[in-house]
Image (tube, rainbow, N blue to C red; front, side, top):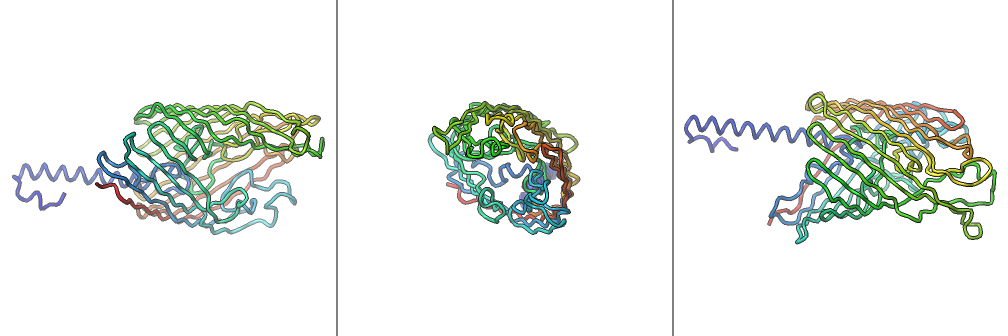
Length: 434
């Protein structure tokens, strides 16, 4: 409110108007601080949160398109080495243990400069007779799969949502993106559920305090062939996914934070494509439970907690493990492997300019006698940072990271690194007015 609108009021009214203006200014400043903290982390909670520019249009407004993203440089010094395709992040499962032989073996010490975290997204709001149609398309440059190690397009979100129905690729219903800590390392804690998956989702209950959702999600089985090469080297074992994964969650939110309970049931299949009738083949039932919570403590600080257990759900975990493996060393029958994951992190807001995040996470897989000694069994992950926010749209800061991998034969290898990141946000809206 401009001061020219208070000059001609009586003194008592002027005081009231000035007081109201001060409250509005304070509220706007607080909103900007919260937006800044939500948007600045590299791959923490902000990775899955809606950008500040993406608030739904007010009733009566027209279509609107929001553009958002950031440019980021990560300067990393790795004390040892990891798989060269993953040197821009620390994944315990990519730490070489069996050297020479594993990817990443070599002389200790490596420097990496990467812009692969940089991101661009578009979010659309379209009023319709059936309600508002929300669409989202987002990608970053951290290529995976056959392009792993490259600075290349990687799809993150591509979906549409109208009322309670969502179709497309986004966070799994089994996942809780709000417990991802404010780390600047790209991949983040090993022991949390983290998976963006094509899905058909239905959310019949969604209000300020309660959310219930169910979904059919794209199936994918991570198979460890183990000692099959020794038992039957002629077999070509591949994943077989005859059924979609079923996921659900129930979430309760309040002023103190939120708690979410999620579950999954999946059919895990294997087949031998070069054998008559693709046999031996079979299916196993995978299942799991995920309990997570973000609790507000002092001021704007958060305590983040998650624990996950199940069988055949490794592909939904952030790092490490297999869904299926040979049950023993004498036959190729498959078993859905048990897995446990957990994290405990604390997000600290020191003031408007400084934030920190510190915590530990672990993935633990129970392997079988049908797997080799080099099969992944345990991944541990620790990180701590101190981040400076000179502007709401900017972040600078260092982070210390430590990881450790242990295999079935109890051989293990730790690794540590220091990362310094520079991040610059941008955003704009087009339309929205009638």
